[in-house]
Image 1 (cartoon, rainbow, N blue to C red):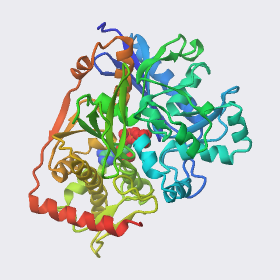
Image 2 (cartoon, rainbow, N blue to C red):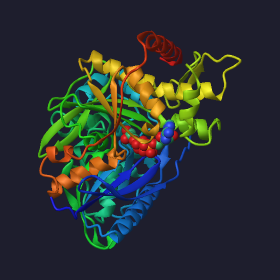
Image 3 (cartoon, protein in one colour):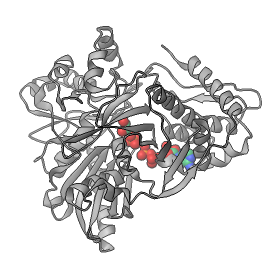
Image 4 (cartoon, helix red, strand yellow):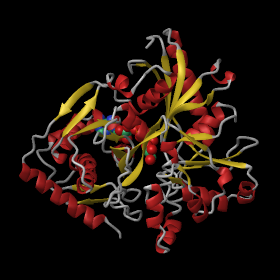
Length: 495
Ligand SMILES: Nc1ncnc2c1ncn2[C@@H]1O[C@H](COP(=O)(O)OP(=O)(O)O)[C@@H](O)[C@H]1O
Ligand SMILES: O=P(O)(O)OC[C@H](O)CO
């Protein structure tokens, strides 16, 4: 392993684009980040301008490269990780998108999903893809664009259009239209990819009425995806790792053995459990998905997705305006001896796993005359922990017994939340020294393909603990808290 080799990791997220340069030990050498506008054209619709995604990605990458090169860094390979499911369709001849990117949070296809469920299509879809008939995934978003953009379907039938998740769109742009590809993790979130046969599924393409000519080639997560065209970063650099952001976080957390589990607390919260070489079907509406594919070998994962976690803290700041910054919440929650019976269910865009209720909306229960900002703040933080526990309960019922949980994402800086999480789950919670595990995971994939790392064991040596949280709460308090939460969830559900 030569020490003067560095990796550019591009992390294109829901609210911002980030570029980080890592050295071979996984140390962060330079970072650049840019937020870009969220577009809400109608109730429940969420879009991004693909050009804003591209320009912010390009700028942060160039800035991080410049800063790292000034320190003598030698960038040899690129990894890409991305917000998953978000759907772009572009014209193959011009490279221009024919519509905004429809974001994973977008609910506009809820009716189509309900209609397909009524036609008893869900079991078939789940058996093939490991997913559920929910607007979250790409398939119905692709169909919507084809049906609603003038001339799109005809162009698609003529093979003039390309579909991609964000990784695929960036890859196309970075290679100047030379490469139309994605990796197996991103493909597994489209609801068009058969996670058992490892190919695009003709039945599903027919069900969603999507021409196969739109689809990218699916490669391993560590693979030779192409080389950036020379004008982009001054010299061509190979792109050698791609994974959806939650899978990349799991890879960065070195969850390589069956039973390893991580939870990422960013805008939403995503728990991924490595289930090894066999896909595990959940009885509890958790998702079966591809964790990574390396050397043609697939590692599967069970996933619980919660749509809102850090986003609820942003709402306290920007919507309710009862805090000025996210970090204030820690002292406010700590100030109260208990939650005073107040529960907040942040179902702003419906409930994700294990309830999958797109029509539910947020609620607060147990308010009294003396409830104030501190109670609401604490209830918001507690909710993130209770929702994680709902996922764990589903996993335990699926036969999994997690031994410890690795955590990452912006919210894990909050020590109060981490302790309450450990208490609520009654489980050890481990926070790593490098919090940017998503970007790190994409860097590791690229580094593996480039030959910087010879094996997963090489990478494992880089993982370092920052702090471990162990349960201290008594059983009676835990039970009482959970009983209050369970009631709040029941009252919030729409279906
Ligand atoms: N100390 C904190 N306490 C609670 N929430 C926090 C804290 N710091 C950051 N957050 C929340 O974490 C989120 C940012 O995490 P990040 O991993 O950067 O998100 P994403 O990658 O999804 O944009 C924000 O929603 C913010 O509200
Ligand atoms: O961009 P993030 O970190 O909010 O992650 C989004 C997820 O990939 C959606 O499935």
